[in-house]
Length: 80
Image (cartoon, rainbow, N blue to C red; front, side, top):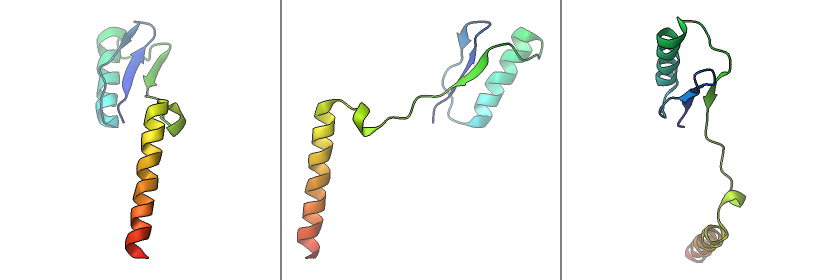
């Protein structure tokens, strides 16, 4: 999952990273470079929200449902 480091004090956000170790490096380098190694007030990790079926556009919900139903019907026909 892509995460970003956000420093509210500096009003900056890092580019997205894929691993926790890369996020730790971003955090450490920012603290060292701009805050003398101290933890700035308001720092946080920004993670994208989880998506759900109901957050998709209506068209994608319909197509996804039709595909799943089609797959289930095909499997039932194949194995019965």
